[in-house]
Every structure is written in structure tokens, then in C-alpha cells.
Length: 260
Ligand SMILES: C[S@@+](CC[C@H](N)C(=O)[O-])C[C@H]1O[C@@H](n2cnc3c(N)ncnc32)[C@H](O)[C@@H]1O
Image (cartoon, rainbow, N blue to C red; front, side):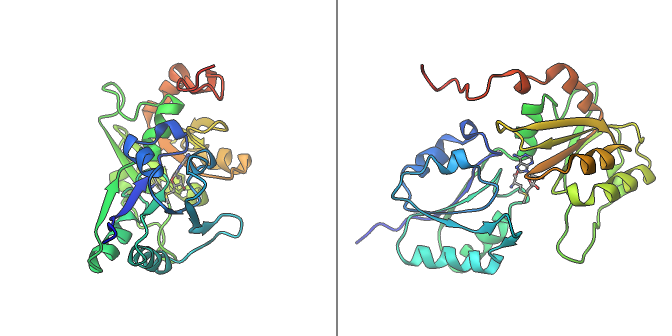
């Protein structure tokens, strides 16, 4: 009888293929179908052997995604066909990645699955931007927040609890709501001069880092007209970028694993 494999819910990390886990890399070389979304970078997709069937679960240009129930059902169907399936997501599958929803769907159908964590974009972007998320002199904690809610529910965040100068805030998917985020945090008591960073295409060759203040964050984000994945970091640790921004100085295409 043919061996049946679990469905692998895998985190691809923020984009630099050298940030894949060893397990993700080994699975890439052994699966036969990958269902991936738009955050998965091209250099990572290029690692798959040519016989692997690629199924794209989202369209960036039209902002049209395969609806979540369709993705859930697709995973079930591929498993039932006896395929060795990887569901590949940007960052970590369990951090704002709907990995929980997909795992629950598989569990509900009695389908075995494994979760392979990835480097979440906050960790990857912060490291490559030279912004330690915590530092004993600047921040005692870090908080990951979504800047985008399910349609029509608004940004139902607890602004008072977020306006803590000793906690670093990392905002995922917040670019579209940057004016509201900045204004609400200031109204809740966070200093308008709190350092803030915007990281676009973090860990990738085209990474862009803008440092500013909480009050100037909206005008900076809007004037840059950023496209592609973008993360915001708010907190005093951002000041360290001035001393620690190493990635912008590294020659690109300079992976330590490529020999001359
Ligand atoms: C749907 S969430 C997925 C998060 C993902 N599961 C993770 O752990 O990073 C998408 C958001 O992640 C952030 N993001 C992901 N990759 C990024 C990157 N390379 N650079 C900047 N932000 C990124 C952006 O805020 C983007 O809007």
C-alpha cells in the first residue's frame, strides 16, 4: 500500500531563502505538490524541483485571494489523492498566517498534519534592520499586533494597553491603517516622538527601512507609496538601527553558502 504522508504546514520565513529551516528545506526536496501564497518569495519558489506541482493560493495584482474555505478543501482533496502536500506560508504559519484555521480544518477531517515553524517577519525584519525587539535599556517586552481586521470589524485594539513606552510594538499588515494607528496610540498616551520604523520587503535584496517618529509615521508611509510586504516597529529600540543596520552594508547575492 502507498505510504500516506501528513499535510505539512510550513513557514517559509520572511523571504531570504537562507532563513528556511532545515526541515522546510528537506521537505522542499521531497514533496510532490506545494500550495503557496503571495508572501513566499521567488528565490524560495525556485528551490523546488521542477516536478513539484505549484498551486498559487493568492493573486497579488488583483488583490484577489483563493477564499479560505477553498484552500481548506484543496488541502483535503490533495491529501485524499495520496499526494505529499506542503502548504507553504510566509513567515510562521501560526503568526497571522491562518495556519491555525487550516490545521483545525484538517483536524476536523481526521487528516494528519505537521507544522513546521518559520521565522516570523517581525523577527526576520527586526534582525535585518538592526532593531533588537527587546533590549534591557529600552524595552522589556514586545507585542505583535495586526493592523488589519476581518472586513467591517474595524481595528478593535486595546490602545491604552498598547501605549506602553517600555514595550516594542510590531504591527503586521498595518500600512493601510497607519494614520489611525498613529493617532490612536498618541491619543492613548504614547509620545508622538516615539521612534518608529517601516520595513518593506524585509530580509530581501530590495529591503527598505525608513526610520521616523510615531507622529510622522503616516506621512512617511504615504509618501513612500510602498508596495509589497511591510511591517512597522514602534518603540525606543528603533533608535538602535542607527548603529546596528548591518544588512544595508552587505553586498547583495553574498550568501555565505555560495562558493566561488
Ligand atoms: C498575513 S501576514 C503573515 C505573517 C506571517 N505569517 C509571518 O509570520 O510573518 C502578512 C504581513 O506580514 C508582514 N510581512 C511578511 N513578510 C514580510 C517581509 N518580508 N517584510 C516586511 N513585512 C513582512 C507584513 O506586515 C504583511 O502585511
